[in-house]
Amino acid sequence: GVGGGAGMYQPMWQSALQMQVEERKRMMAQQIVQQIEFYLSDQNLPYDSYLLNQMQNLAIRATPAASDSTENENKQKEQQEHKLSPDEVKLKEPNVADLTKSGRAWLPISLVIGFKRMKMILSSLENDQEVRREAVAQTLMADSRQLEVSADGVYVRRKLPFASISNGLTANGGVDTANQKTQGG
Image 1 (cartoon, one colour):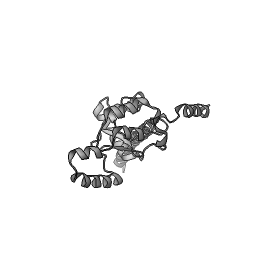
Image 2: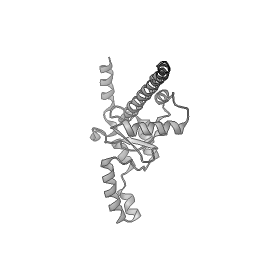
Image 3: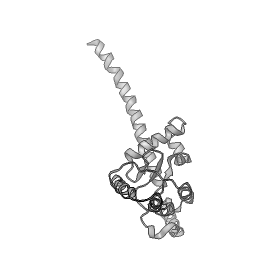
Image 4: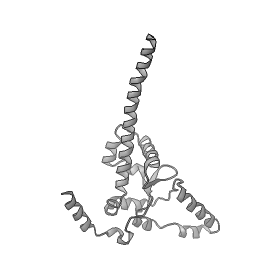
């Protein structure tokens, strides 16, 4: 009887607290995914000269984390590359300029989490670059359909090229921004 009531009381407020914590984590995860997917989206990235320059200048060669489709491609690539000399392999690697034009070059997660909006989203985590990078990498791997994280959890990129690569980077920026403004009111 009587003792049982007290025993049940404590787990109830603990579980309520736990639910709040979980809910906050879920909200933060959602915001992380939405924000970084926006940075690398068709709507933003083609016009974001800072990110495009970073992609091209850093010229990162990262190994994609094994999602099913890229795993098979990588296996095929490896098989082909074993037959080639190192110089020939270099030529086979996608050119960073081309990757950048298609929006599929890698960006360091550490760069992205330095942005003001991301700092706000991550403010409840301790202010430690490694902790935050790891949290973002894990979240994107688990929850983002549009982005892939490198095998080491350090870099992020789009899974797909820009919707209209034919437009290139000069995608008639003026027209697009004008349209966005009028839609926004």
